[in-house]
Length: 283
Image (cartoon, rainbow, N blue to C red; front, side, top):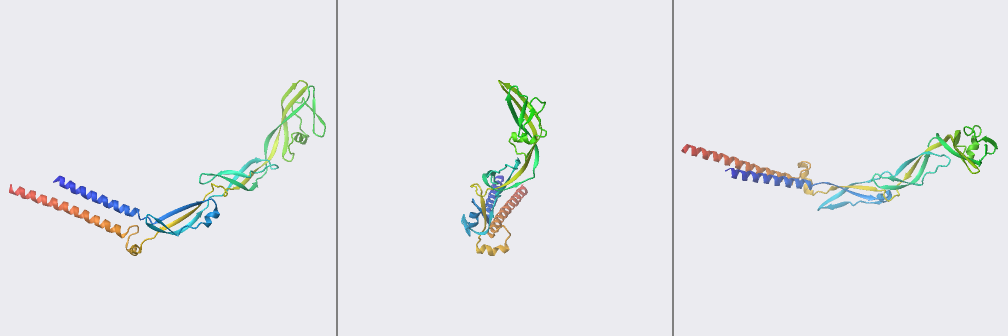
């Protein structure tokens, strides 16, 4: 008896599993939306592209619902720090990493200067002459400066020092100095120094356009909706959203079969109990 019950229960379980599989497959194949993405290297090409009005996939036909252009960032900026305002020139081209992870070369579009600010600098200098030199002459003033002084003299002669160092006095200032070495080789004495001061600099923000790069990608995203048969459309008002009439029928049949199987089991057990009771009375 237990073996027969086990067979019946197993049959019901397999039937129910098959039913669920069919319903799941039918539901999975009823996807109503499709998305098609096309990639272009320029916005102009993307604008001239016309997506298909309909597409076919696995025997189903879909109609175009919408088509949108997704243009990624095409202008990037780069900041140049502490540049000389009298000689700065931004690079004509610069590389950037795009949203898609690829590298693109951008072309210079514009440059915007910031305010001038001062930074501290050191300016090396070198003086040399005969081994017994005691003074040096610097600039057009022909002033003798003491080569043996504790520090290089600069007060009042800042512009002469800048001229000697070939630096623009419009942008540089000398504030002090110190000796760094004093050597004599043969009949030549060389003394090196460092002049301290400030330099005026600016930060510059440059913008670059990467839209001409081969790695620049403009996408056209087209969305499609499943074209359903007219009979299905007529039945829609009486159906729950997401479930077709065929699915409902299939589920109903499955429920009926399961109910019949359960009724059979109940009848079988009831009959068996009666037989056992009759046998007990005969005894």
